[in-house]
Length: 512
Image 1 (tube, one colour):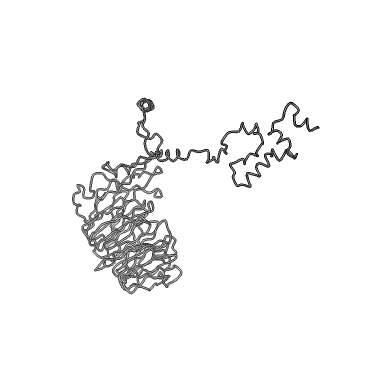
Image 2 (tube, helix red, strand yellow; image 1 turned 135 degrees about the horizontal axis):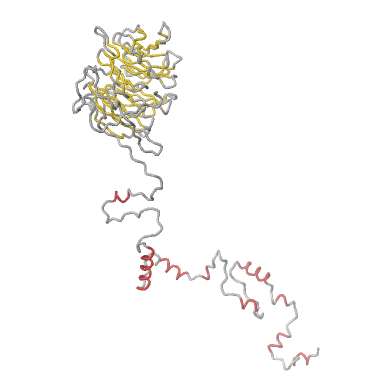
């Protein structure tokens, strides 16, 4: 091209500005119009992820850049530069304040609530009642309400009466803490020792029979049924152990040898163990002529508590020396000895649902019930009952136990286990409770005391499959006679029954 052609331009005269651009040295146009990749590198080098970088001077704007929105951000991560921070802070500050509604909106809300049958000021979806405000009076009533109604049927609460179902007179009851004169057999027959005689009371029929009567100065010191209820062992003040057949009411044999009275007995199959006043324990095998098969000596005073574990592996004994001894059936030496009691230990009971759990109770100067793990020999817990402990009865239906007491309260106490919370106190007798026995169905406890009365208490009423307490037919429904020689019980029209609504024990299913 000629100089004239350049100065004048291809389409006319050239202005000074155009001449300046034309006279600029030629170079690659890509430097004047950088690519998007180059633009991103420039912006990254300056550290501003939100900016597209400065426009190169002299470069015309791209049509694509004109069409893009002013603020772009990811849908999950907002662009803070695109927000109105001041407005947002103002709205947050006003979030707690109620927004006033106009009349039309309020009327609409009320109409919708009325059509739906709900309150305008109450939440529709809630899982429990609202917490009470300070102006409400009875807070306990409000907080005790159930959050949601259960679809399961409600379980009827157990009711324990503090009056006996039946009272029998028992004249001649010896007032001696160390004797054991009451036992209830599996065949539903109650044996009780009154002075020199043993009487059998059939709870099914109400019949009373005199089993035996001692001669001379001897008196009954202890009675104990075999596991099946066929035979009764009787310990006397002369040191003899007699075995009687309950069905034929005849004495089978007499096993002598003790030098003092036999105040406690316990059966383990064909072996009967007898605790003597001299502190010795003998094991008698009733099948052989030489009945004495073992002698256990560890107590220094009278043995007043004795019981075999249900599996026959361990024997627990308590004495007037304040000791508790645990014996292995294969040894004549105590497995271990406990010395925590500070009075005579007469009350001993193995748990029916935990094999190695033993409860022991102390006398007037102790008043405690201790719980032992006979596997580890550890004391698990203790209860200060506040009264002399005379016996302990575990329940097989509930995780509970009943303790009977002497001075000062002469009452029955029901405890839950293992919480050891007291369920109820029952004022049972006018004098100290000497003996207790549990019925074969596990529902009723018989108590006897030196006030010469025999009372029956329904405490462990059986539960049905639905969880409700079940009713059974009666303790001697046809019975109208008291023990022989007994005077009518006070307040009883028939001499035996106290109260009009009597709930008695049914015949167990295993008795034919």
